[in-house]
Length: 426
Ligand code: PLP
Image (tube, rainbow, N blue to C red; front, top):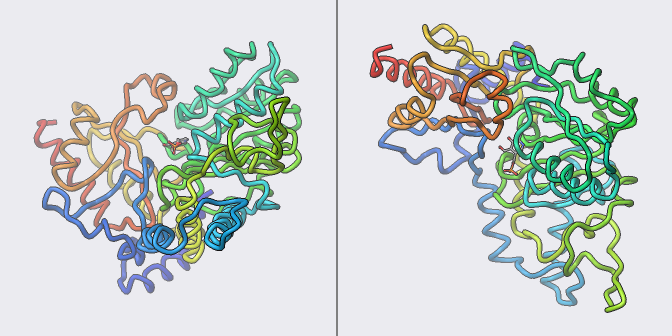
């Protein structure tokens, strides 16, 4: 997914940042929180896989919504309600553009990736799956793309299978092919692994799954902020992501559903806004995505998500991908050069996520020492316990990059690891 860093990209980035280093970020100044010291140090925020920081444009969009446009949406007769409805539906159109979906009516707003996957499981899955049907995921999935399917299997008698991954953290394509069979109804795959950074060959996996007669859900939580995504080119049936990993607010995300599939999906939550008619004899459902948006949605959040999408598109996701690829390459090379450091996940095609272990230091201790240096990383199983079991480890330390990171963050990470090694005498 990440375009390799070309000399043209490097030159462009150096010119934008006014410096010589291709690792400088011209966009860091857009993020107010990065100016605050943490533990009296310059903050090196490398926990972007968990959540990203927000640019001023997104914070202002949220504030402006509540200052100027707040009202409940859909069917309001007054001006403010119609105005808020327009903003909400414009945000849906922004998501359509981000994903290159054919129609904004293919986009359902959710609380995030987790809710989007649960929606598919409880609506489409509950309607379609029968005992003996199979769901195939990969061994590198986040718990969000495992547990909803386990719950669905428990209700329907379907079976959850997983395709193996290799020691480099890539999907074993032969095993994936071997596990696909006429009983496979759904394939669930991470576009990018949150624990390893592996970029999966989604278009190829979709082709194989469709040949076997299965639909495909792509978990795009770690993808949408880091490279262009085109659901039509991928040809997937469902694509889920979270706004907060895309420089937007928490509590808002989206699910793309291929239009013909969405039309046949029953509601999964009942309430206001998702109905056409209600009587005590029975109710009928709204057409389109509204059928899955029961109750008052996160209107301000969706508007701010629209601003986040505008923000990344104004920079260009190709440029963001190139910047993060350069950071990943530098950090990988420098950490690999340290004695006692082992990288976990060395796929040929990776996004800006670096998982590693340091001999003699537990990842949590490493994270705590890095924190004293102002370096924020994540330590643990990264909600991917089956993946950690595969590697026979309880967890890793993980640095994950975003567009505002720069060479100083990599310097701070490497210096922090060395400090930890000295403290532990390893
Ligand atoms: N899938 C992946 C690959 C993730 O990295 C995450 C979050 O870390 C999720 C799903 C869940 O996202 P959320 O908690 O925003 O619903």
